[in-house]
Amino acid sequence: QVQVVQSGGGSVQPGGSLRLSCVASGRNLNVTAMDWYRQTPGTEREWVARIVIDRTTDYADSVKGRFTISANKARNSVYLEMSDLRPEDTAVYYCNVLSRIGPATYWGQGTQVTVSS
Image (tube, rainbow, N blue to C red):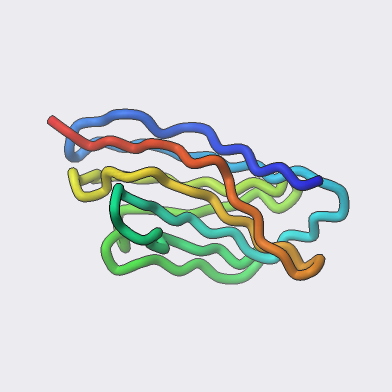
């Protein structure tokens, strides 16, 4: 059984920084990519960033230059460093893990990020 557990997030003033973490565990997980998404009430989940393990990273235009995604392959973990946060970054952030087995995707439980003065 695969588990995806997120941590981090919280409340910060505009211009501040936060770090999100996500760890996937399970037998023979064989992670190929990990993404971050975010969602606000009444809207669809929005893609934020992706890291293809040992290869590339990509970002939504809205966060490019402010957010940095990184991963620890050995720990099946992914991180999102968020800086210069804006009120419009307020959302519940979700981690998504893509496994070569299946293939299949797995979601974290979500983490609230609030940017407000």
